[in-house]
Amino acid sequence: EKGGYDYFMLKEIAEQPKAVADTLLGRIDAEGSLTLDEVRIPAAVLREAHKVVIVACGTAFHAGLIAKYAIEHWTRIPCEVELASEFRYRDPILDQRTLVIAISQSGETMDTLMALRHAREQGAKVLAICNTNGSTIPRESDAVLYTHAGPEVAVASTKAFLTQLVACYLVALYLGQVRGTKWGDEIRAVIRDLSQIATQVDQVLETMEPVRELARSLARKNTVLFLGRHVGYPVALEGALKLKELAYMHAEGFAAGELKHGPIALIENDLPVVVVVPSPRSRSVLHDKIVSNIQEIRARGARTIVIAEEGDAAVEAYADHLISIPQTPALLQPMVATVPLQVFACELATARGNEVDQPRNLAKSVTVE
Ligand code: F6R
Image (cartoon, rainbow, N blue to C red; front, side, top):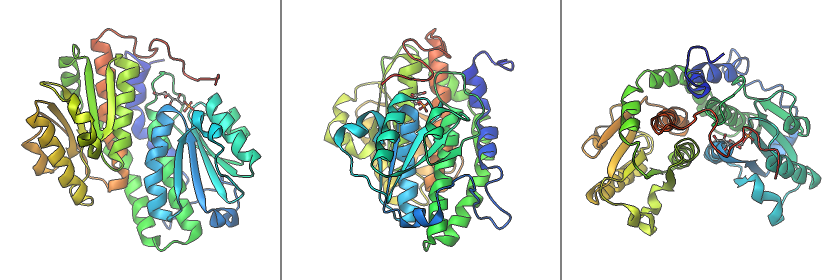
């Protein structure tokens, strides 16, 4: 049932191109517009929404953090992202014009369920993004957009995450479409780019041997840090979470701009630091800033592991290890940048003799608060 792979996680990582393609299937029409008939929240309600609030836990929360950039950029609706476990305890401001998006692979996460119940009690509309048909979270929501990742068995989420991102982009673009924002052409262009992503994920998967080798060489390290900016920041958080849960290593993700406000004190000789570099084409200011961040940490002895777009010549001189990913539009980069981090964590866990599919102390769905 593992289809020839040693672990479900490896199988599920490999299934990502298909999971991504399946999640787009039937949702883009011949004109290149979106048809999300399942989202039965009336267009009028979506047009009136003045705020989006995303609630989720763990990896799904990281998908939500990335969604915020897309939603605010494409629709200009303010978007908040909150850990489901914190949400209802701070008396959040919600009303009929708030669209709440609950993201959950299992559809049974109690923290997320309690958050959406609270939101609905306050009159907000709730849209679930979920991978499990007929589970509790979609049943209790006003509408659901299913991710089509197929069953995810490994405790660490991989393919579900990529499909959650696809669903988030679709919702963001759909909101832009029904609200007729001035970004119409841009929306169609992004939909075209999104259709290429499955192939690009496949390309990444084909070049992972050096990443596995690198992971094995780091098996005796205690700490790995992850840096990113813009949508690369949640990718850094996700890379760190994968390493914690699978390799049981101390791993932390930071916004690269925060380095000088404290974390740079952690840098010491030969400390592995993974840096997710934004595209030099569409985010050139951020790109330049992150290149200086890489120089700063390298000058202090860090071993730099740099994830950058193909053809990004500026980073080569400062990368002790360079992991190339295909060129994508800035907002879609997490789809390809996350994959090497999944492979990295899985291989490190194996090298450390850990149980990959069933990490200690963790359960696949967390049905207690
Ligand atoms: C991390 C992981 C967890 C889940 C979280 C939410 O690899 O699997 O952090 O993402 O428990 O679970 P769902 O998406 O089922 O609500």
